[in-house]
Every structure is written in structure tokens, then in C-alpha cells.
Length: 534
Image 1 (cartoon, rainbow, N blue to C red):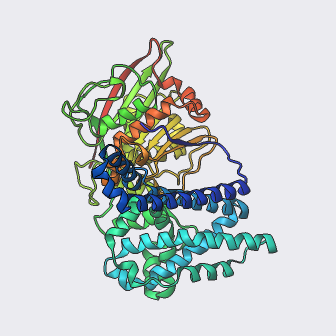
Image 2 (image 1 turned 180 degrees about the horizontal axis):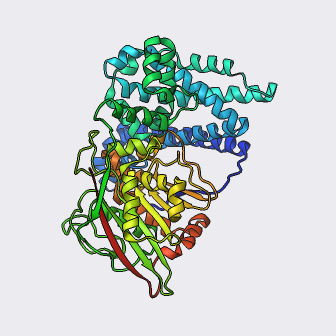
Image 3 (image 1 turned 45 degrees about the vertical axis):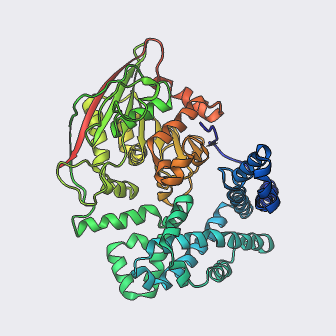
């Protein structure tokens, strides 16, 4: 188990000179590692060494094995050098953002995105040919590459004149992008791997989409008219992921796609009941996983801490509430909401509301059948107005519970004190500061990047990042299937690291959530409800 957690909480003060110095050290280290790899390759292929192996196998075979590990193993020189160089570039970009200031940096990035949008619109025939995903990946990569130049020029402008010249920055960005040529459209598989290995490209592609729409509207009166009628929110200069999702859900007014329905909530068949309250974040999220997948006798390892007995796969659409009563009589509630269970864009009666329609609508900031179902389940279970509530969810479940925590009307009915999300794109929600939020995100997970913004920790929100691709337990699976980084097993593993961490922010979160955790004399009761579309 890798214990490499990156924890973000509260405000951060950074010295740009220190970032530049660190970037320089890393860049030199990357060059040294690459040179080491080249040297190792030369030695490994040296005819004298190869010929000596049969003559002296006791020393020659181990030598070739060690050289092979250096060239082809998990820590091979060339990919290691690439990762170090990427980190150096990210540090340099961060330094530029700090030097120019957050507002000015945001303006400069918007200029770069507009230039990217123009590149996409110029390639409209290629888009029509079905290369939209590939082009989006390439444009996102170009945005990142051009961002440094734009930010560097922005720093120069601020230092010399005290203000930004956005027109000049636009020219810099446009020159850096150039035209999108046929080479960009040549290899779809390369783009798919590129996105899988660098989820931040998804984030950038989502953030750039509104600029693409505005560029198209500027070039075509017909497109402008259609967008004004169907998705006017995309024409706003500050449009982001919420507006993109809203544009898609607007299709529901004209077709059955993404059309919201009412929801029916009823008691679900009782399944496995926990033997005690959870003892930490991992066991809370394990309860969420239990509603998503269950634990079959012939399946993977059972529940965390053996809190849950073996059970089969649950019905779709089940929300579980755990009422934790401490020895002194105080009551707290844990609400566990699973992720997406149906990917159809056509909601139908009797189906689970935990589907693609809910994904889009919750990102768009619209009420959903799932949020309504969770609220109704809490009412039926008898959650008291003054009793503390922890909302927990994975993927769409994290989206749902964060939307509820951000809803002032919901908070007037229920005392939400804590939120836990795993693999959820929740950065667009304004959760008030008195609610403690813990967000777990994997660097190889595409889903948290779908909101188009980078996660921002605060005094009330702790963000935990982990690269599961560096964990020997998951590295091979991640390399073969990038969705592994979004899967349950990897997030439960990360949650266990959170529980064991001595980081001040994580200790503070766990201590503040003591009302929900096991203690001498504590007991737990379970309430299961099934939601279905009507």
C-alpha cells in the first residue's frame, strides 16, 4: 500500500522564487535520469557484455537483469524522466500564476482558451468527420503548453506597466497554437491514452468548451441564433461546466433525452446490517460501496474491518442511512449514496434515478430525482432537525450529497455537519464554511476533472490526492484500465490511508466527526430505501 497522500487544507502561502528553483532542480534531475537511461541502454547492448553472459552467467545474468529493470521496469529511466519533467513544468506554471496574481492569471488563461476555441472552429470539418474527442484532447494539450507563454508574457506586462494587455496576450496565444493540421486527427487511440494518462486534459477540455461555442457563434449567424435559443448560457464569458451540462439537459425540453421525472421512495429489502458504527472514513465509504456492489462470497475481500457480513448485489437505487447512538444517548446520522448505476440518457418508469440524467442535471445546478429521493429517505427515517448528519457518496453519489450540502433549503431542514466524497467532480458547489468537507481524488481518475476546475482546499474543505498508479497493488491494473483509478477498491485503500494519517487537517476532520464513529457503548441502526423513477 502506497502512503503517498497529498493533503490540501486552509490557505497556502508560496514563494515563487522557491517554486522556480525547485523546477530548475527537477528539470536538471530529469535530464540526469534521461542520460542515465541512455547510458544504461548503451551498456546493456554492449556486445562485450552480451558475449560475456554465457561465459560468466553468475555475474552476467544478474547484470543484464538489473539493466533490464532500469530500462523496462516500473521505475524505468525514460518514463521517470518524463514524469519529473512534467512536475517541473507544473511548478513553473504555478510560479507564474503566483507572480501575476490569481485574477490576472485567470484572465490570461481565458485568453489562451479563446485561442484554443478558434483552433477548434477552424477544424469544423474534422469535427464533423467524428474526430471531436481527439481534437479536444489535442487542443487541451495545446492550451496547457501555450498557458506558460501567455502567463510569462502576463508577468512581464504586470511588472513593466502594472496592467494586462489582453489583446497582446491573445496574439501570443494565437501564434503559439497555429492551425490545427491533419496530423492532429491521425491517431484516435493515441488521444484516448493521452486523456487516460493525463486527466487534467479532460478538465481543460471541459473548461474550453464554452469558448468553442462562442467562437462558433461569432463565425456563423445561424449557429449564433441556434445557441441563443437552445443554450444562451454558453454565450456568457464566465460559462463553465455547469453551463455545458445545462445546455445538454435543455435537450429534455425537446426530446425524451435527459428529461427529469418524479421519484418514488419505498423501504428496500433488508440486506446485511453492520455490526457496529464505523470507526473511520474508510468504513463510511465502505458502507457506500455496499450499496453499489455488495460483497459476494466469491468476490473480492469483504468489507473494511469486517463491519458488514457477506451480501449479494443490492437492488439499484438504494440509499442507506445509519443512525449512530452514542452511550450518552446523542444521535447522529450517516447518509450513504452510491454512484451512477445506469448510463442510459432515456429515463424510464421503474428505473433507478442514479443515471446519466442525474449526472448532467446535478452538475448544471438543477434539482434531480436523486436529491429528492435522498431528502425523502431522510424524512421517512426520522432524521431530527437538530441531529448532526454526515453525507457520503462516491462519484455521482458525491455530487448528489455535495449539492444537498450546498442547498440552503435542505440545510434549514437538516443539520449537515460533514461531507465525504470519493472520485466526484464537486468543485463547482458553494458549500458553506460550517460544513466540513473531505474530498478524495486520484490523479489518474478522469471523473473529478469533469467539472473543468481544479480542486481548491479551504479552511472547511480538505482535498486528498493520491496517484494510485504509483501503488504496486494497483499499478498494473491502472496501466491496463484507467477506470481502475475511479474504482471502489482503490478509493477504499486511500480512505484507509486517510484514517491512518497524522496530517493535521485529517486528524482535525476525524476528531470533528467523532459523533458518527464507534466508541464504547455506541450502537447503530440501519434504514434502507429504494428510489425509482415514476
